[in-house]
Amino acid sequence: MTDHPELIDSETVFDGRLFDLRLDTLRMAEGHTFRREMIYHPGAVCMIPVDSAGLLLLVEQYRHGPRARLLEIPAGTLEPGEDPGDTAARELREEVGMRAKRVEPLGGFWIAPSYATEYLHLYLCTDLTPDPLPGDEDEDIEVVRLTRDEAVAAIDDGRIIDAKSIAGILRWDRLSDQ
Image (cartoon, rainbow, N blue to C red; front, side):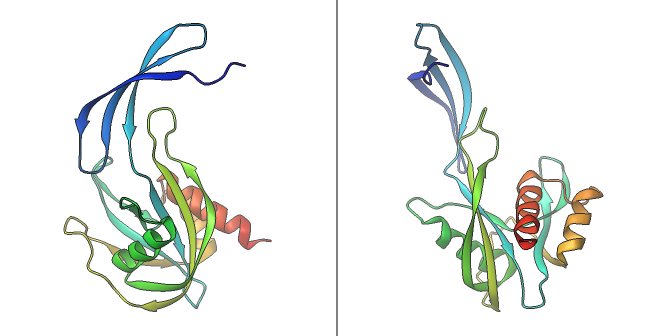
């Protein structure tokens, strides 16, 4: 197995609000070059907010990719220089209107490492109290509360279909069994 290829050029072909699209040229140790289209994203957080009754607070919102409202765990993009734990606390207040006394890291994961740099930090948020912040203008969010078993069942029956929610809920479920 060889070392990773050397990045020899990176051309920004789209400079967007949430991410950039770059055309990267890489060189293998043997000299062969190749190109990759890459989405450069600052990273994000996703949360497993659990209220005092043990219910998971999910958000239902419109997602343009599937052109449907999806049931998801709350999430948000890192601001430049912002600590992921601080992002999780802020986004929780914006999306579900709750402040978490406890914000515990549960690890993280890459969204699509073959073509994107987005890494998601996962947090368990507990000891919740109402303390909303204004949300984004383009969001129409409805908060939905489910038990852990209902959330896992929603994955199994196809009501929860986005990767971050599946990964986050299943990690929480696995850790809850310990």
